[in-house]
Image 1: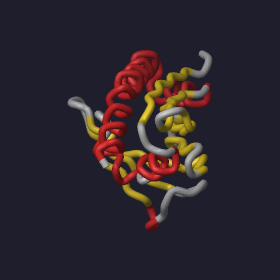
Image 2: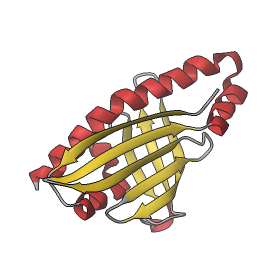
Image 3: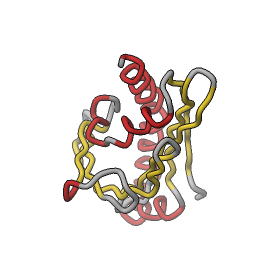
Image 4: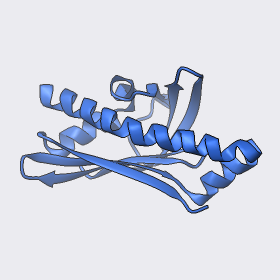
Length: 154
């Protein structure tokens, strides 16, 4: 199976550096995401390539925590990370546009992530992957809208 990807964008009436500062403060992700309810930096770290943070996700069916490794931290341009263990990748890009910043959220489950799910779940891998893909797709609009509300409120 090829990599799975999805992205969505929104324009926020704030400069790219300000929106980046909000998003790269992973301790705020629980304010915006419908699934990720909390994040914290390991070792009192911060948004830099190689930094590790833990995210706590919650759905009606379960709660789980995953370590994440920052893979891009370019203030005002890009913030991204890989979910360790599953190889899923999440990220945001920030592009200046008239009226503010075009913010794009991206999710990817690369081939090695698909292989991880196939090894872990065997015949149940396809529904497990599908559920994660659907959650990523449905959650992006909600997350981006919440970031926009918070950024434009002050």
